[in-house]
Length: 124
Image: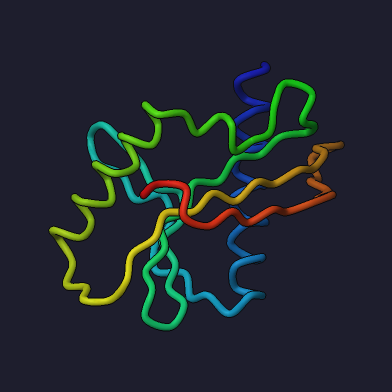
């Protein structure tokens, strides 16, 4: 049951992050881009920058911030997925990897966002 709860929470968080990015002027290019060993939650474009976004959703920061869950191994997997995407798609602009932290609560099948934190350039 906990894994299902986490999956539902994560899906709501990704939807909230996508809406937040759209509100900031980004265009969503793709969601849940997958290769065999990695996934990118959201690929978005703002001006001449293609941004690969890892979304982390939590109900609290009691066990660390959501961004802290993007450890070195996760960053390496993100880089592999970014390189794979860029090899398959023609892009000549800037590229960046961000994390969007979504804090919220899942109650009775509804997700309530309390805070969204967009952190730019997490992988150099």
